[in-house]
Image 1 (cartoon, rainbow, N blue to C red):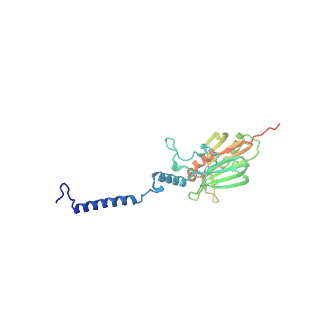
Image 2 (image 1 turned 60 degrees about the vertical axis):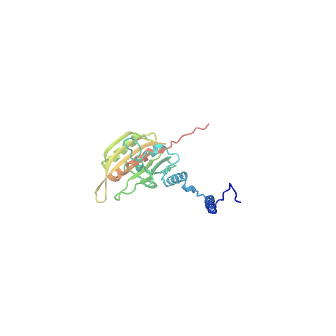
Image 3 (image 1 turned 90 degrees about the horizontal axis):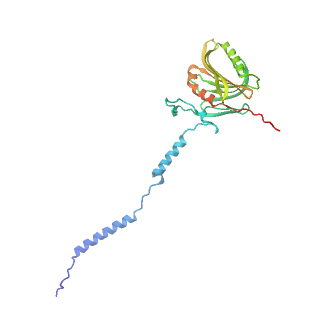
Length: 259
């Protein structure tokens, strides 16, 4: 007798269903067992940004200056019409100090320094101590010179010393281009003279130079700052020389009274 109300599922249909289930299970298993790919720290945006910043800081040249250098000492380079600093023309500086005469300043890092204690007669008519010279990079075999001389422990007035210097300089027949009686060195009164001169070589050929001389009187010492060079080398380094003059600090000697 045949069963009524029950239907037999064909074997082929059962086989197809089993295959589908097996494939689905295999796919899930493959997905679960697959290792997760993680970005290394270097590939993350934060790390890349940090690395880039670190590299830029490492490769950036910082000016070599004294720890106590003021912003005034860094006023260097060509400025735009708006007064903003043009970074491409900014120069880097090194510190110079002389403990004996209480003087400190900065000078361009690519200049050579020569410290001396040579006493000789100068073109301004006085025997003074040449304590240091700075030499610019050469241009067409020429270089500019920035010098500091000291006339120590002299009892004189700055105006008198300056006037005698001008008389002595007139022997070489200078062409004075500017005089400044209100110039300052480290907030102290100073006299400045800009002039053209003629230096004659052994064959009597006149070699024209541009010059600056600044005289100031501090701690009973006369300090003389000189900058000179041929026309081209002078003009190329005038900004550096002006920055050096602005950076000068001469610490006054104080006399302490003890009871």
